[in-house]
Figure 1 (cartoon, helix red, strand yellow):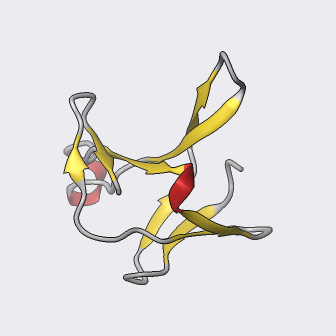
Figure 2 (cartoon, rainbow, N blue to C red):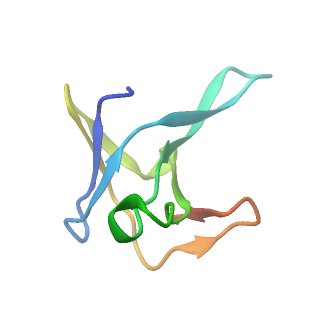
Length: 85
């Protein structure tokens, strides 16, 4: 999953590549995919907050692309991540 790119089919935006995943250990289920935020000014000033894409937004997984359907705007979480609903 690490080398798969995430694309939002609603807006056509390429969010980036999966870097990590959020897993619920008690049940062993995959809760969300984490994508690093875009770099600021050629990477000299760090990165924007990470994207957190819940698994219920995933519509299709291919060999190299994951298609997600995300409606509306994102909101920031306390952990400095963007959450799509």
